[in-house]
Figure 1 (cartoon, rainbow, N blue to C red):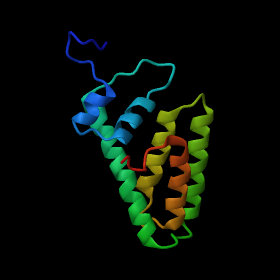
Figure 2 (cartoon, rainbow, N blue to C red; figure 1 turned 180 degrees about the vertical axis):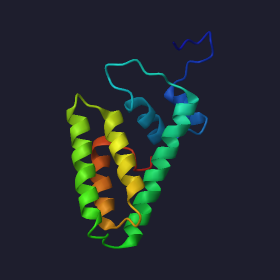
Figure 3 (tube, rainbow, N blue to C red; figure 1 turned 90 degrees about the vertical axis):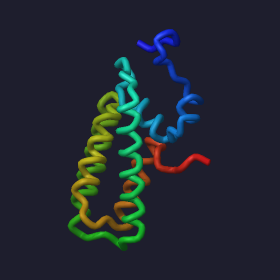
Figure 4 (cartoon, rainbow, N blue to C red; figure 1 turned 45 degrees about the vertical axis):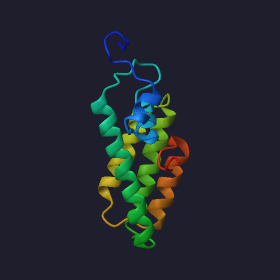
Length: 132
């Protein structure tokens, strides 16, 4: 439980002033199911920042990598289905994030088709564009 007297109450403004990126905060807040209590920790925020950074690097590699291999089409299709299934399961954002992470880990040489799929995922999650 957060409280000002315990020193564990944070506003978004406080976190941004500490250098926390908005996308990392957003991911940390949305990865807990909306029907559950969130356990907000600085470690969780750090982990979310790593995930956002990993996904951005994946997209950068994909955009400079070319068309993508034909063998990756099956992985993209599986990832898209797993993402959709998770989101259709009462907005299971954590499951959708897991599907993306599993897919990103399985792709050795991402290409433009992988960047396009990540853009589709990001249209739902809203994490990869940098705030100015």
